[in-house]
Length: 84
Image (cartoon, rainbow, N blue to C red):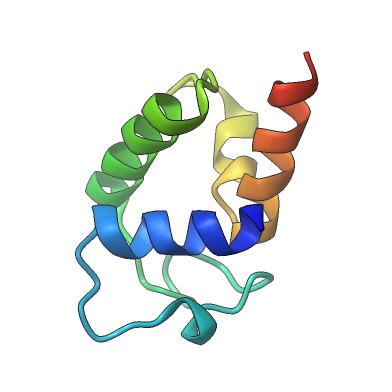
């Protein structure tokens, strides 16, 4: 399941040792309130997503922030770009 894969990728890439995929709420924010990720985490995660799923992201694009808002948003982005 893609949602599970994305959660595992987040944990692996960002070395979140005390977190299990089940601990991550797919609808919760990834930054500030939710997982508390920062801009460095976003960069690392973006690179990992590009390598693993072949998606394209623009650091300057406003919609990129929306894509990184939650696990659900990332899953939606991957599914959308896979269909192209």
